[in-house]
Image: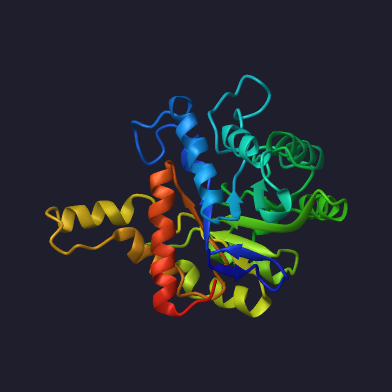
Length: 289
C-alpha cells in the first residue's frame, strides 16, 4: 500500500484510509442500508482493509444509531465495530482517529467521550483526536472560537499531554473558520469537506495546510454518491466507461498535503476495488510504496 506523510510528523498513513461513517449509519447514502443487519459484512470489510495494507481508520461517536434516551446521542456502533477488529491486531501498525461527541463540548464531556471511545476501540490511546465540527454556524473565520473555546482547546491539549491521543485535529464545513483554526498553531490535522464537487478548500485551506505542515484528511473524498449519480444520469448506458471513484480519487491525490483518503466502504469487495484504484493511480504517478 502506498503511504504519505502525516503532515510534518514522522508518521506515514496509507493513502487509502477507511472512513467508518457508512458502516454505522443506517440509510446513509443508501436508504436500504441497515447497520444492525449488515454488521458482519461491515466487520469483514474492516478485516479486508487491514489485510490489504490500509493503516488509517477514521471514526467518531456520532457515526452510529441514534439513541437519545441513554444519556448519549448514539450507541457508538462505528467505534464498537472498529474496536472488535483492532483488538485482534498489532496496535502500533495502525493509525486510529476519532472525534469528540459533538454535543458534549465541556471539559468533562470531552474527557468522558474520549474515555468511552478508548474502551470501545480496545486501546489506551488514539493517534488523532479531532474536534467534531459538524455544527457549521460557528465556523466562520471570525467566530470559530465560539465553538472551539479556550476551555475546549485546553482540554484537547491536556489529553494529548496525558498520552490519551498523539495528535489533535479539527473538522468542519466552513473553510474560513478552519483556516483560522490552522493559523492558531494547535492542530496537526484538518478534515474539511473537500472533493471533486466541494472545492472551497482548494483556494486557501490546502495551501495553508501545506505551508504549516498540517495533514489534510478530506471529508467524503470520493463525493459520496454525487459523482456516480451524476455520471449515471449523463451516461446511463456506460458508453464513456468512466469509473467515477477513480476520477474522484485522482483529483484528491493531486494535492500533496492530503495525507490519506478516509473512504467509506461497506464491503470487502469495495475495499478491494478501491485498493486497485490506488495502486493503478500510484503506478501512473510514479509513487513509491
